[in-house]
Length: 631
Image (cartoon, rainbow, N blue to C red; front, side, top):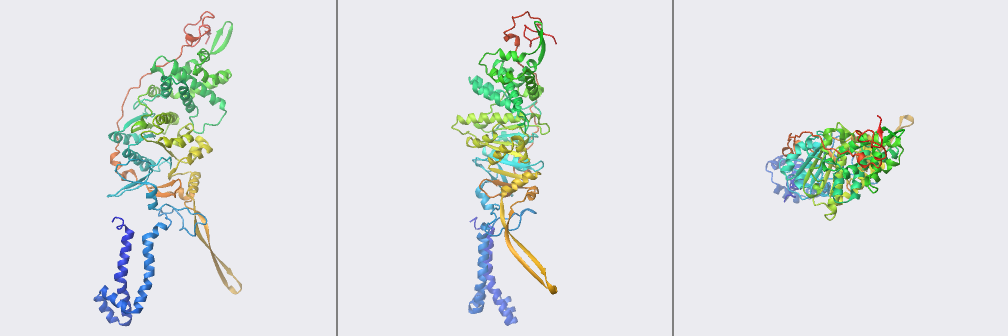
């Protein structure tokens, strides 16, 4: 019944009534008006459709005319009922799109999805209703009585292009958080301004979520996170190999913490990685107390033991670095000693460059608030995959020096989720959605192209938000960036100012066939003029790069694998029911920044040379007793 009440069926029914009741009367009236005008006026005043029908069948001319008129009427009825489904969708957006399609696709058959196709290829979610699976929001139609949104419930990755002031947060991110909360799926979000946590946390907790917040902007509140925790957990399980692997991953993230930092001679980066990984293993395995096992101890150990000192051995004055002596005196199979090999084999001056580079990379932990935030762990990274949870990573958009910490958290959480999936039949009990704003400004995640490929089967979906494609090229290199884009089955476009990105999106939309015409005029002798013309076919971009750059506010362009592009309305948060649920909280869990317990190895305790000569300077902890510090 609802199907019959659709506008196209009502229009067809109205046309049928007019054809049946009004057209015969009009024909009879016109003929009578021509033959006898007075009778025509009487006919009009005493109108009866049934009498007109009777007259119609009595007059053969009228009947023949009526039958001929039925041909265009029937064609028009067919167009109203089914013709729309076979016509390429044309965009109603002002100044966007080209002329109607022509030909039979000789130069391209691209077109926009019509509404029926969009409803079929995307999940239509009546707002507020309970759903089994959630997903990224493509667009929505919001009405008073009936509102619905298009979402993707499949295991897919999504790339979102939205420059500053494109409305990506209010039009896409907030509705997606609200949608996922109804589906009960976990989420990890980067939150550059802290506004996502401020507006969403209370609602998520009311929906039964466990909510965590790691605030790298104001580390004095929120949850704790120890980057070394995966190393410590592996050591507790007796798995030294896994612990060492985690140590190298942490080192890699800090060394390659700047987008586009893949260039330069590898010896400097390899050496820095070697030093960081070795120091992490030293602190993790040698610190006597768990409260001392954190990255600040790593930073302080390098600062205290990595300094070159002038010392006297007998009659000679030499440069001495206590860290080298400490590493050499570790047991032969100690993983820290193995990790330090690259630095050990380097010349003294080169090794000094390694140390200064590492000190620069780890200088974040000299900040009292950061070292306090990262001094311990108060939650498990795999919670996201076990029960519905939300983790907000608040990162300062005005200061990118803390972005490596957010990237490291994202990377470690993924590895924890992989381990959780492996013990649960290969898939997480609760699907996890990573919604990463400012992804282009984050340090490159190690093997991210591979992560995108294999994570979907484990129940982890990636939604990365970029300002333009060049951010990916800069962070990962063009080849890997192309792989990343190829592994994102969905592309949601809101706005960009980058011409290269606009051109790439235009190419993904494809081309379609349009008609062309040309005319020519020739003036001959005697002022004679001859005119000629021709018609042809050619191709046109469904959306040109210029039209991409002028994309109107309030609409999303959705390009999905194996489907025609679609443009969908994307209302502001103020028009969503979610606006009433996602209310600003404004509260913070205040805490006092305290000093943390730190571990610095005692070189004297392990030196093999301490009895070779008489100790000269007992007060110098970082110089073995057989040497005399002279500075």
